[in-house]
Image (cartoon, rainbow, N blue to C red; front, side, top):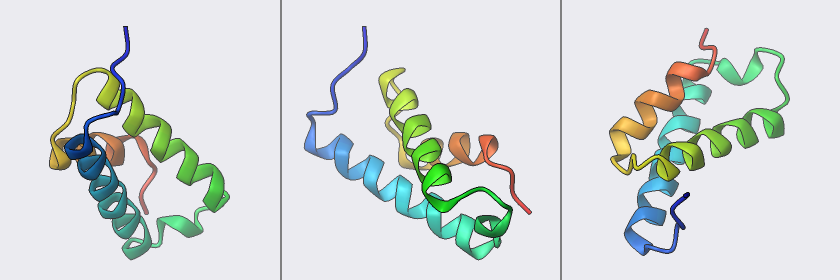
Length: 73
C-alpha cells in the first residue's frame, strides 16, 4: 500500500528536498551530463515519491538518498 501525499508538511518537505537536490545538481554541473533536464527532473521526482511512499519524510535523508542515485560529476 502506498501513502498519499496529502499532508501539507510532507509536501513542503518534498518540495524543499527537490529544490535542494536540483541546486546541488546545478552547482556540480551535473545537469550537463547528457541527460535531458526534463528526463532528469522526472527521475528525481519519481525517486522522491518512491521514498516518501516507503515512509521516508526527512528532508536531508530524501536529499541524500536521491543524490546517491544520480550520476554526479
